[in-house]
Length: 416
Ligand SMILES: [Mg+2]
Image 1 (spheres, helix red, strand yellow):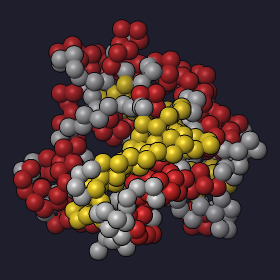
Image 2 (tube, rainbow, N blue to C red):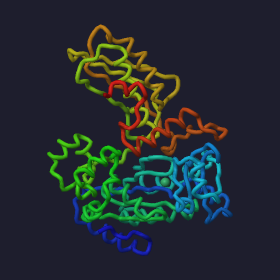
Image 3 (cartoon, protein in one colour):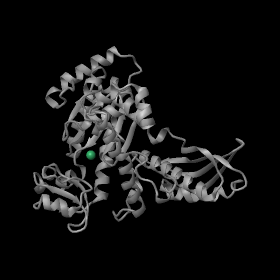
Image 4 (cartoon, rainbow, N blue to C red):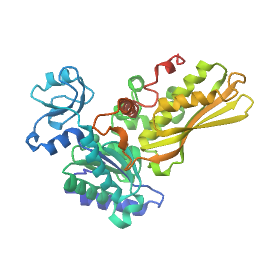
């Protein structure tokens, strides 16, 4: 059963979670997922209390813009983010439309993250208003995890005047789903032994990375809930849905061992790929490097780090390994900059003369941008850097639809 996690029952939850933590081995983790409620509109209401209770939409122009975020009052009319503003206003003609004031949101976000860091150094920012916290080691100082979540919620409200929804669980996956259960101002605690009862009834649409095609396939086999998926034999899943299916099968069963990763932990970020067939043509190699560079940049942005040294790894068909590095004038987290650099480095290898079986791209000499939110995301005048804005938008889509959802145009060539 999902424990009703709102404030009135918090003591119950805390006791419940605490008890099961006492029973489980020390290895079990306590993860919090914290997600600000309708963050941009909430900040607007904070700065202009006259807007309280009104449908507020933050986004582009009335005629051609897109909704960035809508207040809960506006959501009731069917308004949602990424919707064309014109459509949103047809649904909710009385909405107050405000421009995105990113510099201000960033400032508030910095204060909120500063609160998160008071409770644990293990904070993994997912976006400007969302983070995972590993509070496994914080119990002695701050009490059981549900108590920590309650304290954080209280502190954020007291110091920033905003509400945040929290999910408390033994893994990132479950914590993230939990934080969404009772928005706004929610607190949902899933004790480890109640995880299965929590996950089983969830509709399969909530599964991470399950796109439309996957959803349709699930429906075809009458898999409608996490429980339906969990009960299928692994072999069958592997056969029908491949690796991605197995991953979802694991998540549906509550198996998610991913750690909370902070930018401080990392020496370098890299991706590499071994090819089914050796690569000999330059176009093919560049296509792969573009894909790898994009992934590296995306991960760097997620962890709020930039790096100065770009390294290309090339393994030839005879398994001889070559690495070439280049140092940039300024640290970057941009896949295109990384790609340009590795292309230059590729010219310094024997590529073209010898077939290649593996390519790898990594960035090292990482620096951390303040609280984990990229501080240079916005120019001093408060406007967004265009490239960064594009990257942030793409990151969101990846986050939502999975790694393979958006590929640079040239990458699509090879997929047939
Ligand atoms: Mg949010």
